[in-house]
Image (tube, rainbow, N blue to C red; front, top):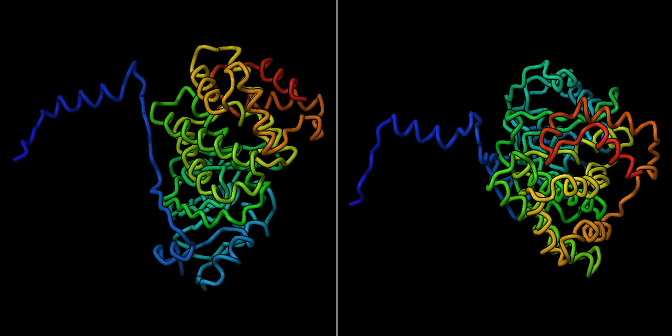
Length: 397
């Protein structure tokens, strides 16, 4: 017979405190939300989740019509592209909000890329408009609807994060809102949803996932648990990129499920550890020039990580660079040159001036990063001051 052991409450409490607090700081290791499900087809998902009346589906027409329309679902459907193309904006949110006035729904089903999933998170909240007040923390963040998210790209990892990113037109920048209220209740992995994903969206989204994994690995909030997800995502993506380089763009098709899983892993890592300077520096640039999120991040990625390496070569970046060297099969000193070559085979990197960026805008971008992106810069591997950030922008012109 198994012997049961009991301990005094005082001992249990002390044990928990010792594990949870060091030097007065809470050391949370990992939070895994939401519940993740995997299905072979959208039909299987819709049947098991009983999608129907009382549900609001937010998606794109090019996703919904070929895969969902034939199922005859009795739901309210919102097509994101009818309100605006590209990255999610405050104007898109406000216009959808107006069209949903008077419509009752208890569950939000988001089916799409990062734009659709971030919009869906916001519409699972009680207070949506004016959305600028929500992001300025002047509206209470209350989740009053069930949220189910289905990614159709392999990059944002938004299905497992508590963050929504919006471009605010009047402010000419992107802002993020992070709250546990915006975690999905269920994240649904269906490889079938990626088969019609155009190559350009595959490229920008998968590079975004790669950057999520790398930034979260060197974040001061990283733990041994988040490191597992970060490194596995990096390994899967490098392996996939090598295959595509060898056999061409269609080489991605048989391994799309791998990229979907890697994106999910990277999302878990960065939802716990956060991302830093790459995202912070891309926001004002991407917001002004309406650049796809992953592409905007890629512009800054290797330059920032070279800067990290020069400023603090023996810290966590040392471990990352050696890991990259192993899977890139190169000398550790050549890591970022080799990484640029590999990533350029997937998506050609462009200089800032090729997008039309002017010298005057570099100063504005730098001010934006130092005054409005502290949520992100707090996760930098090392502190980057005003001059260092400006220098990075200058180097990328």
